Length: 83
Image 1 (cartoon, helix red, strand yellow):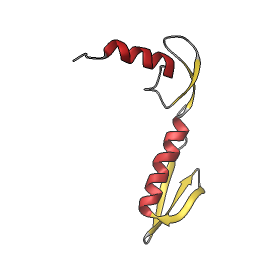
Image 2 (cartoon, rainbow, N blue to C red):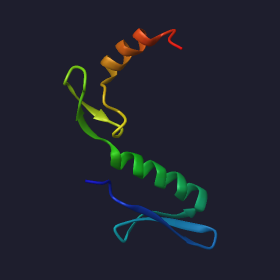
Image 3 (cartoon, rainbow, N blue to C red):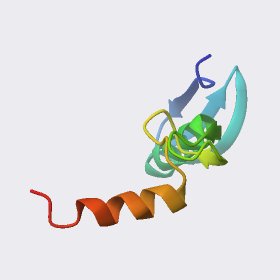
Image 4 (cartoon, rainbow, N blue to C red):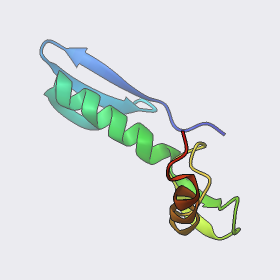
């Protein structure tokens, strides 16, 4: 299942962020709308996942984030100095 689709609708120097036809942010400057779009998309990808190392549940930032903080910190010590 994919994350909800967000889009920016521009009018002049202003913009709004829309999800499923509903305005979720704005109106405001286009640059702020683009930043808000990035934030909303990142939040939509977050979900509870199982750590691939210890099987504990944790809040994942997306498909690339599969290890909990405890396991990730232990793994980084193993790779210190690796080229």
